[in-house]
Amino acid sequence: MSTSPADLVREFHRTFGLDARSTPTEVDPELAAHRGELLAEEAAEVAEVAVEGPLDRLAHELADVVYVAYGTALVHGIDLDQVIAEIHRANMSKLGPDGQVARRADGKVLKGEHYRAPDVSSVLRHQGWIPAAQGGASDPTA
Image (cartoon, rainbow, N blue to C red; front, side, top):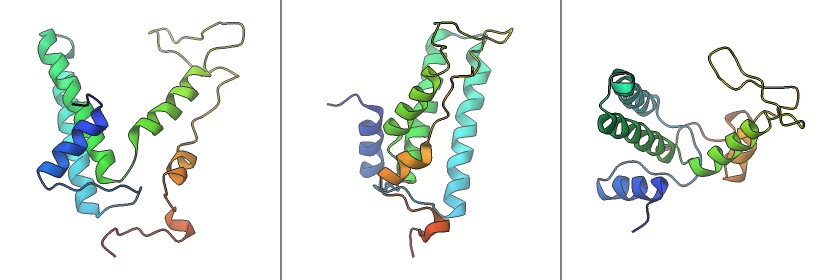
């Protein structure tokens, strides 16, 4: 059995008859809103236990966020692993060529002069997405 979040969530969606697309596309606004509500609900649960724990509940809630995020990507036909790889590439470009890291006072890593923003649109186009402005369908049922 695969432990890939994408594979596990795809199995769940197929088993329970939930939306699962293989090409990036816009979805019905009601479905998009529903997915947003699910994500917000899970993120709120993380925030609730992040400081006070217990650690096992935090781990559970973090996994739920990832699970719902992968499900939302699947509903939209997005290969989230590829998008994450592009975000990672961009994040790694925050490191200066001298190996120095710029940080905010709270420790957040900042974008330096060598930062190269992610090109998520390119990743999605590679997955078959045609932006609506270029004639892509905005309604997957059309």
